[in-house]
Length: 210
Image 1: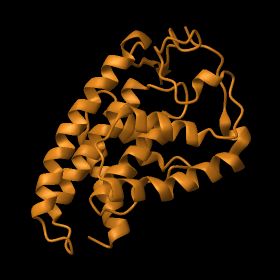
Image 2: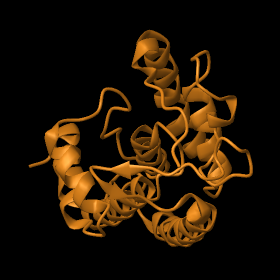
Image 3: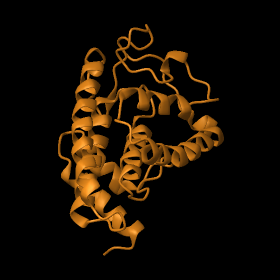
Image 4: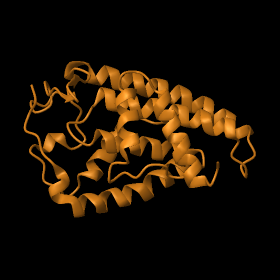
């Protein structure tokens, strides 16, 4: 069952300030540490995103649906009428996602080490954005947090792009344009191709490509 909902737009100034800081710190962290991605990273981002913002229950800060806390244990969510991952299965789904992400990042790291650091190879960019699209869509599908999953998904893209020298493609706030919405919704059904195309368009806009 869902718990009390909240809309943090009422604290938009503070929310924007928090996200601005994250937009600067996440790629820097990714570049400097080259640490493997973990679920704890996303929990920490979520807590930072909500710092200084009132929430209905403190467990919502960095807490996954299905966590042992009573406010999260059976918190169910739908998106556009479609059921997301059941609360009881969120922990396992996130665990599997992180394992696959770590495997893919390990492979990309090995390829990246062989590349000319002054040039972003187009094929390598596509590989990074394929992973970014999958990661975003799967995070939204699982919907681990009560609120802020779209923003966290865009943080994951920011982290991944920062790791491999790509620019920031999507604002953390406000939500990107309608093309983003439709591609994201389709992605939650397992169709990631449209979201990849959306990211490629954004990359070409930012990088000055065709």
